[in-house]
Length: 158
Image (tube, rainbow, N blue to C red; front, side, top):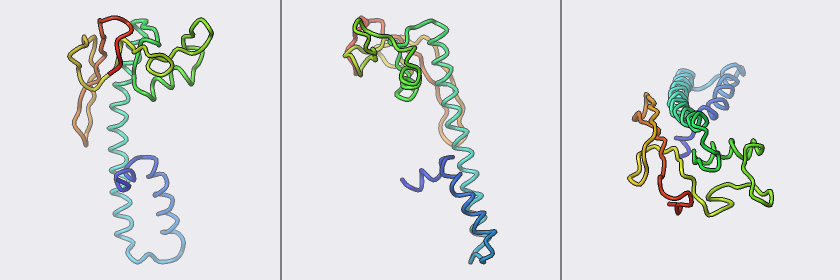
């Protein structure tokens, strides 16, 4: 698992300067071609995997924009932990409040579950309102689905 994480863009930022320092340090590297070759392979994989990640993120962002376009209240949407945190915790002015002024965050501060969800697969209990395709180069491509659960607002969480 540690080797897989090294392929992500954040870790490449650590490896490249270290490799350059080793190459320019004046000490000879036992196998400079191997060092440069492995660094180049890591750089290529990191860039391709980052591109794949950004393609998926773009589809997710399109789904969030669709929430906004349809004027769906933020407390009725589930776009995943990171997106929900950004939309509500990083911007508390967007977070709905209860009568006492406390934040209302479905599935966290209340037992309510959102009626609208972004998902990587359609769910049988939900109506698909929109789909957002994404193309990846190193992994299977797919779609992000904007789902609506037509039952009561307080549907039980899965």
